[in-house]
Each structure stands twice: as structure tokens, then as C-alpha cells.
Length: 240
Image 1 (cartoon, rainbow, N blue to C red):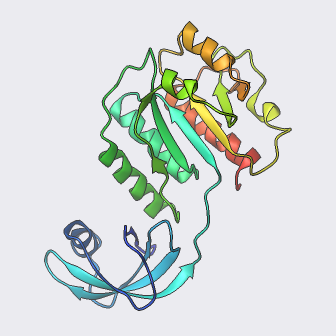
Image 2 (cartoon, one colour):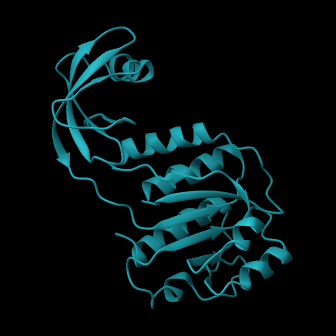
């Protein structure tokens, strides 16, 4: 069985004793059936990954003893995803897969055709933490507060904006990114299920930093498009 990994939002250092919160204690002792002396791995997104031993157990609490760092902290590629919230389960899918794929930052944006304007950010962050724990990640992406797309575009600077054009009239994404160097900062914009409005299309097209791309010959659902675009951008500009 794979070693249990746990995200802890506290500083990590050698020989530190870490009291466990109730939820963490329940997960380790009741769900994973760990006991005193068992080893796990912990991380916090800043201090790398650390080996820890269960030093104390109780019904609703416990203590971990940190021993040594197993991996130094690394930085995620400067890739962010701008996405319009969709149905609950599919939004969950987007944030989970973005975390697994190594996205540094997620920015929900409300468009004119967005069909869901209610987001439970703590629940989404919990999904991202679980994804990072399970996929051997060292960091959890930043989840920004949602904003209206028009406000985001109005304040846009010179950061590359990879705009996934559902009209499929733009260059294929791999070809469009071929001339850019690996490590270049980039944002990916995925539209809502109803597509961007003409006004939004005009605003996006007016940006000098916008790079329109096609995701191929088939129309993709919004959650599929997010995963497909992130995969290609990671392979071209990121750490794949």
C-alpha cells in the first residue's frame, strides 16, 4: 500500500512535534487504520516533504513526530487557469485535475453565459488538497476569489493569455505555442458551456497578449477542454 500523505498548513521542520486536528486524526486512525509507530509523509507547499511517525494516538487527536525531509520544495510552473464555473461535479473535476496537472493558480471567472454563480471555495480547496496528497504533489494551487470576466480583462497587462477558441478557426494549440520558450508564464482561458458572448470575444481579441488556439476538430465540454489545454501547455511551456 502506498505511504499515506497529508497536507498540513503549518511550518515543517526536523524534530518538530505536530498535534493533529480532529479531522486529520479521524482520517489517519479510523479511515487508514494507522497506529503508533506508523510512518506517513507530510507537506505544506513551502517546506518540502517530510517523513513523520505517529507518536501519539487518541480517539479525536494525535501527535506526529517529524524526522527528516524527503524532498525539497519545488515551484510549480507559472501556469494559471481561468475557468467559468459549471455544474458542481464538473467544477470539482476541473479543480482536481488542474491540481494533478501542476497548475499554479486557478481563477474562477463569471461570464455572461456562466450557468453557475455559486462557488464553495473551502470545499473546492479541500478537493485540491486531496488531489495533491494523492498525486505526490508538493504544492496546492492558489484558488483565487471569483471575478467577472470583464473586470479581469479590463485590468489585463502583458501576461500571455491562451484563449481556447471554440470556433476552431485559430491555430492548433501545439503549433500556436511552438515558438514560445519553456518556462514562459501563461494563463489559459476556458469558456462556459454556453460559450463567450460577442462582447467578450471582442474584449479578448483586443488584448495584445491574447493567443487564440484551437483544441482540435471536436467540440469539447468545458471540463474536458480545461484538462486538454493544461496538458498541452504543460508539455510545451511547463515542467513535463
